[in-house]
Image (cartoon, rainbow, N blue to C red):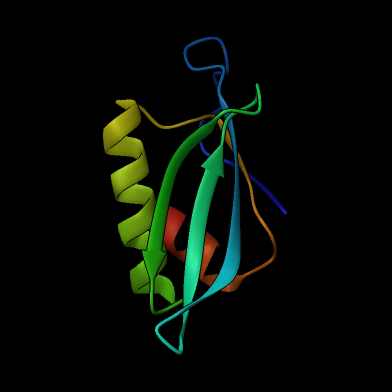
Length: 88
């Protein structure tokens, strides 16, 4: 699903694609969150034990703080915690 965050793409022409993969560490399953920019470079990664709204908010805050601005479009899978986290 594609989520547009701002209407003026001339100010910030970045597109982020996010994905979550599962990793097994010490017999426990964790989620490996990653964000990739429009050129295919990995921007940020995070390993968490949850995949809920709180985890998504934490990931996006860290990502946007590191980048210094919000992208004009975020491409995600259809997990509902993404859209609720981006609305905050």
